[in-house]
Length: 501
Image (cartoon, rainbow, N blue to C red; front, side, top):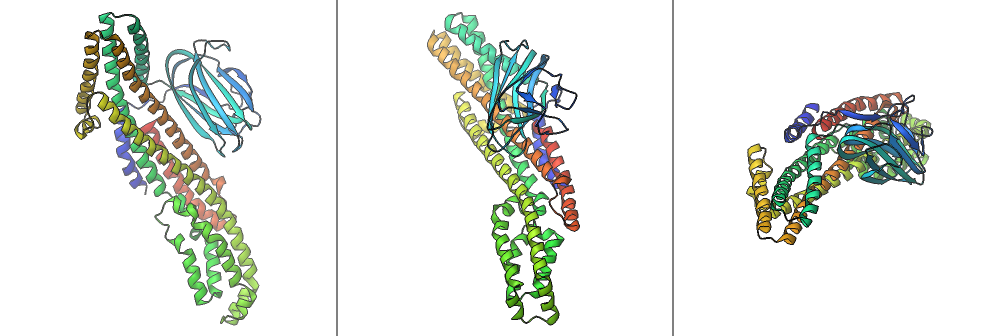
């Protein structure tokens, strides 16, 4: 199974690594709130270690309810991707996290807004990821507002900014400044430089669109396969466990042929789940089975049913003496299995939402890419789209150069005709496409945060302490599957980090 997964994920990994140099994960800032640490923050208001729930290790920070503020004690040289883990106190808790940066770390410094994240309660930690992309010494500030309880905060880290991200953000600043100057100054040289910068940036964001579309396609495929072939489903199947098999054997011993046929029909769906996904278990198969099965047991071991049956004397004696104990054992086992199914259902819901979000992202980005190509006079024909999505660097470079030339030609034509108002409007529309592409980058960051949260929940659900069973043999069987599931999800998570982070 591991070889199959590796083969499925390798193309996506290779594709993403060739499309963009993967960040070296150089950590610029780290704070895990372990005991004896905390010097990373010079100002903390509204937070304390007490009542916190750690994500990893033994320490975390609990913030709220109300307003909380954290300010880094030192400036960070390169603010790249911020990642943190956050857990609301309850399903009713809501939070709003505002991120700022500034050149100085005082409370009254001029803090520049970077991003705002809002969310609501969950029963586990959620990853949050924000691209800051600020070069130069900058301080970090987190404002956290909570309602209906607080939040636990843990494992904050900032990776080194990627060079291409820094250049792109700097270029957007330059464009913004140039547009303001063009409105006031009709200097031809200034306009020519502005048009060249804008056209180059526009062509570059076509490459960004391609990269994020490829990333989304890769995640969609790999995540689906991870869960479809996971050991996790088997761990929620009652037929795996010795206790349930024993209950079935004892029941069949005293059942009539008709009752046995009905019993076989009831458990048949679980026998068909060998290659199935999680959804078949959690979408109602067990819920439909549980209560009728217990009713069936009670009826089978009922005194009148036993007395009127054609059982041998020894089987009737067995049924009278063990019927109640068998029923109680079944009820206990099914209660334990229900806890396991609760984990499975939560994972299935998470995965379903991730896949919906990725599918929506892909469709929206594909439409926007078509609009962008049309705006650059490339049309929506398949030949140009194939060139843009090609694995061949030369083909992609050629189509991007064509887009750059077309944007520059249209803008220069307006400049030459002294149509200043039309030129400014055209450059603003062009700049709008570039900003919209940045919005897709942030959507992708939230998708990767969801996937990280999913991996985290999955790993916790198969940890040894999550074993729900009380009988030794059942615990042993659960652990055997859990060992494989841990290795499988660890390999998948590591491949995800290498390819998309």
